[in-house]
Amino acid sequence: MRINKLLLTLALSTPALLPHLSYAGEVEVLHWWTSGGEAKAVQPLKFSLEKQGHTWKDFAVAGGGGETAMTVLKTRAVSGNPPSAAQIKGHDIQEWGSLGFLTNLDDVAAAGDWDAIVPKIVTDIMKFNGEYVAVPVNIHRVNWLWANPAVLKKAGVSVPTTLDEFFVVAEKIKSAGYLPLSNGVGSWQDATMFETIALSVLGTEGYTKAFVELDLEMLASDKMVEALVKFKKLRDYMDSDAPERQWYKATSMVANGEAAMQIMGDWAKGEFIALGKVPGKDFICAPAPGTAEQFTYNIDSFAFFDLKDSGDVDAQKALAAAILDKNFQETFNLKKGSLPARTDLDMSKFDQCSLDSLASFKMAERSGDLVPSVSQGMATTSYVQGAIFDVVTDFFNDPNADAKKTAKKLAKAVKAAI
Ligand code: BGC
Image (cartoon, rainbow, N blue to C red; front, side, top):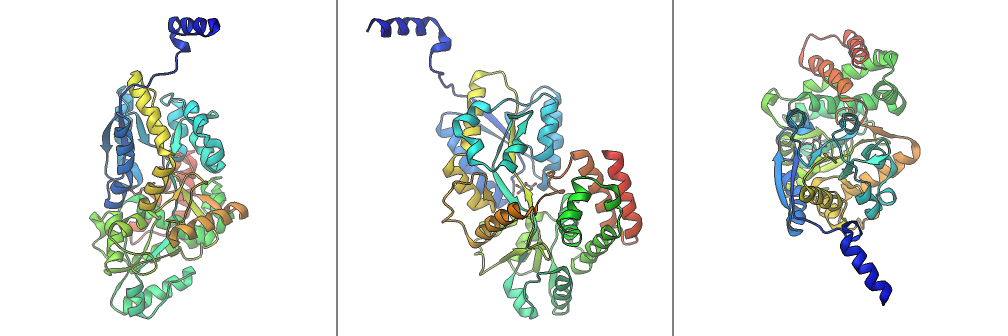
């Protein structure tokens, strides 16, 4: 009794011994989830924060791939006014961490047991100098082919499984009077198709050598020339109306039968779902031709900035915890098209595309065929990625560009950016 009284007096006179009280604050969250499916997916996170008494300030910057969002973020951070959290992925997390902008989330991570519930390949990306500075939202697979089964049927073809088959199928679809391949515009979308073709041509080892180890010989190799030639051949099966087209418009063309196929990550599935389409019936998801064994990963995450206001810090920690909450992981990923970032979820509500994705993630993890996406900033730094984007997009958009010269140019540009 006397000891209890003593402890109480001590606690009241020593605030550090009191349990931490939580204050209401504001979270400003920068992201580029502005398409129909993306906006629906992120909404529950906002509600979860508001339910806890915090204010959500949306900082959405349109543009798939996030290039514009990153430019806006740099301006805000440099002027000393960063948001609470920003959609920052892959190597960029290390770049922001080394500039001293990010805050330590180890207490939230320990409370949520992140090391145990999230795959190591994911947690490694979230840490800077061994400390959590970012929270993963999901795991996207990039190397997918999306197809409209009704269009394929009308053209008398089935889903191609190799690149050679793909070109035969595309030719038949074209002769039947349909658009074989829908595409959006922008260097990240060109790079998405290029990395997928390159993976098929180079295999896991060659892809890793070229884009992760940045082996200059591999970048300038005959195999890379072959990848470039096949990539350019996609042009024969696209329309010329693409200049202003967003990736999700290209997806809706497949959804409503204006085009037969699209090569895109599984955020495209989020769009099909948002349009009310049913996998297996209205659209088909299949591994991109020649890459069934590989899983090109793109992990979405939010990095957290160092803030001063204690209410805002509390709101920030609540956001970090909410991202890995079981319910949010389920509702978000059902809508987003991706796999949950935590491995202990009941997957019974997920469709066949997600289950296939999970099976191939596990298989690729075992066989060493999990490869980081170049177009999504997982494989290399933003500098090298920028150099690759420039060369690849110039090549794709210049009808006279030569593949041999381009492979050499690619190696040179990467060398200069390392
Ligand atoms: C992001 C996805 C997003 C896609 C299109 C990618 O960079 O990782 O989450 O859906 O861009 O906006």
